[in-house]
Image (cartoon, rainbow over all chains, first blue to last red; front, side, top):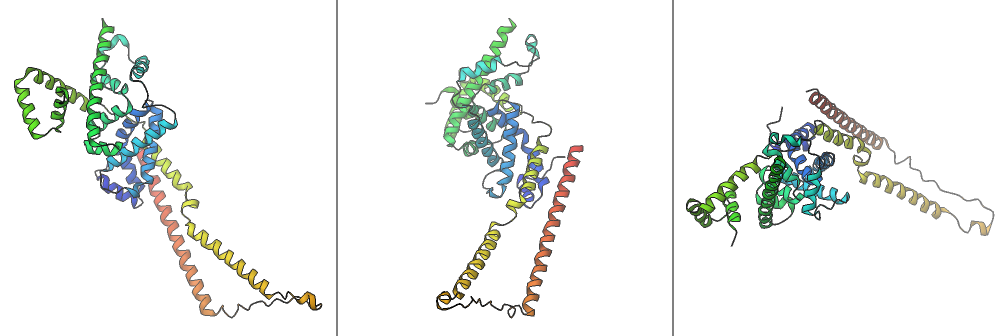
Length: 193
Length: 174
């Protein structure tokens, strides 16, 4: 059963030595942290490694959490930094990946779906496919804004940039996502014909 | 000047100024292009908000907690012993050895070999007089308190680990 205690209560209990309280925090935030990690890693194994690393780092530094911001904002900033560092270490040039190249790479990935059975694919499948084709920063901003319940200021704090920059980046990310979505749907429509 | 889409996104997000909000509301009501674009973006916004989150592996939480527990189990020797205690003990021994060395060198009759065949004579300090009964009792009492405190800390830690393991195994069974 999921604990109904607030994040702050669970943090207090963890700091008092109750590790099961931290297990509740992990359970509560694991889906979002894993999704954010997936925005960078693109493979479940790497994402799992990043997400696990984040929770361990957060546990180690829990005593330094100032409580001036939401726990999630603090946690997501750890995810963002860890993901960037891990990718740099693995020499995956996330920022320099050409947009078109990424599109081609993802296009060529086996989708696991029967191509003749396109009608079975839901809109959410096309959306997640389009998100996979975005650059990590774009995908992260969209995910933080729509699923992370984060304001522009909180996203700015997480990513270490200005709130106005986040606003511009969010607008551009939405534009790109819309383009990708339309492009993928057109591509599927052509295949149907 | 922002593009129509940018203005509409700001309107949907609620980040435009009150004046802009009013102006865009009017434009949506009166202008077909604005209305069509607004409806399109609203649909898109709803779709983005309904995106699905990825599901981590079943054992994810267990793996995280296991990694934390292992880290704690490996840490004690390094982390639990205060470095200042180690340095204090080291300093005590260095001071003791230095003091004995200086004292021993000070006691040497360096001219003894020149003047005749007398043997070297070291005057060993009589420390027994300092170890009086109340001092020894105080020292032993302090040792007993320290031992009890260490034992209590050990039992508390053991109890915490036991509770956590039972919680984890309970969670795994579920």
